[in-house]
Amino acid sequence: MKQAYKAWDACKGGDCSMWHALADDNIRLNPIGAEAAGLEFTRPGAGREQLAAYLDSLRSSWTMRYFEPEIFVADGDTVAMFGRTSWTYNATGKTATTAIAHLWRFENGVAVEFTEVFDGSTAAAAAQS
Image (spheres, rainbow, N blue to C red):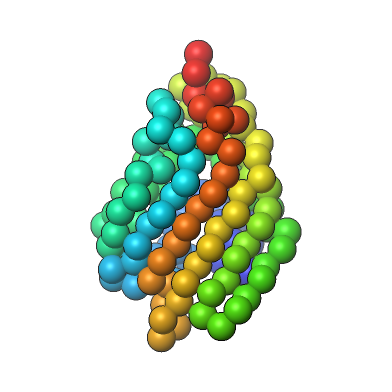
C-alpha cells in the first residue's frame, strides 16, 4: 500500500496501474467530496470500469502537484491512509490543497472497497472561475 502511494505521487497521477493492481473486479467506490462543478469524479460506483472512469475523470480535469501520505493505520483487512494532497484544476489554473483520507477494505489480498474523503469546498473553489 505504501509503495502504491509512493508511485502515485512520483508519477503525479500519470499512471494508475498501482490502483488497478490492488482492486477486485467488483470494488465499491465511495468518494466523499462535493456535488459541484469540477468534482464529477466523486460519484460513487462499483467495478473496475468505474474505478478507471473515476481516475480518468480526475486526471482529465485536474493535475496533481503532490500526494503525501502521512499516516497509515491497519486493522485486519482494513487500511486507513491520512495525508495531504494538492491538485490544480486545469480549466481555471487554480490549486486546491487539502487534507485527504482513504479507507481501504481488503478480502483475499485485493481491495473490495475504497472510500475517499477530502475538503470538497476547497476543490470546488479551485474549479470555479
